[in-house]
Length: 409
Image (tube, rainbow, N blue to C red; front, side, top):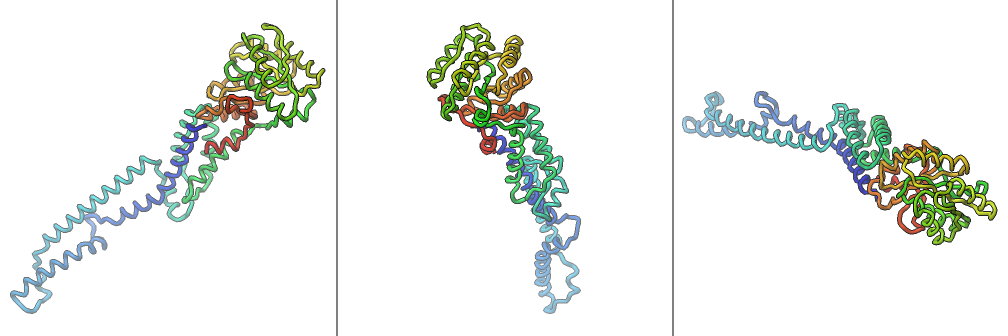
């Protein structure tokens, strides 16, 4: 579940850690660059390297001098003929230094390709402290790739902009511990995702029903094929397990077989159905179901509606009439998590038309991305109250934003 998005977020955390880990590595490279001598400079290090060769040359001269005199005088050192030999040795040392520097340069290029380069300020600061604050350029490199990853995971453009903007602001204003950058970035990512998923007004369905006047009226809306009618049956089973009595209203009078399908689900969960013939006024069907519930002290009316494309003006007008006549206590949008950004657009259109109060996402167990939930929650500011995680009537689970974030990060 959510494997693709989880992998991409893990890669973002890894890239962030590579940026910070390159700080001490750059320091080591700088030290190594200071050690190799230049051929034209007479540094102390170079003198130390050539000293053994000079001693060797001196010994050769001294051995040669013993043939002429048993006493060795300092003045006889002047015509040293071994000087060309020393020069040859220096050239060898210089060649080795050149090879070493070439290896260092190759190592630096390899690290540069693996992670964005740190600014001079970040490098210097990291050498004297245990924390580092990334520069804007470094964060921009990370954020750009993260935004692409989010878009590939079915997260809407507006939502991706919000998430990356929040992460960027927090990273730029925070000193990251250089020895545990991944944990800090992971916590920042969790906080931003949790904020994105947090609705303006959380809803606990059972608490809402118990506190409201009866019957409590729930209208289910969405397009065809999202599992709307099946989800109604799952909600009915959930409420009946908590000792609440329910009745179905067959408000989908448009689609062929919709009334028969709802009756089949009602039989399986053991709930009554109020239905008219196909083509009847959907608002009138739901009204009759509400009156039926009042007469028989039924706690909850679960009203179906015709699945409609959000661009179908006539069906959207019918939905507005249902809401106007029956005044539902809760309007639940049913979205298919597998449709990604299409579900986000549907939720946006239905919310604009009638104002949705909550969301249930179906087929969540088969969703490889998880971006649909994040986008719908951010776009509508409405709570996701349940998710469908299977095909049986008991496969309906309350949605917990913290659980969802833990699955991703």
